[in-house]
Image (cartoon, rainbow, N blue to C red):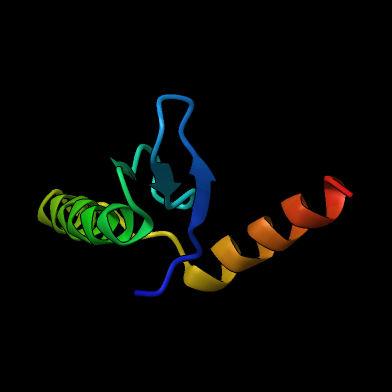
Length: 75
């Protein structure tokens, strides 16, 4: 699933990336490629855990709309 992600610099150096639609799904790394690679692992585990426990996954389109709304409200 292609949920939108948010990437920002970490105060300690490197980057933080998160999937806002998947609560608590975030990763940190020294470089952007490392951070994105780590985020893919975390996202996969998050989805596997939700499915294992019978929890519905957030709708990708809903997630996109929320991100768009947030980006427009910060202008």
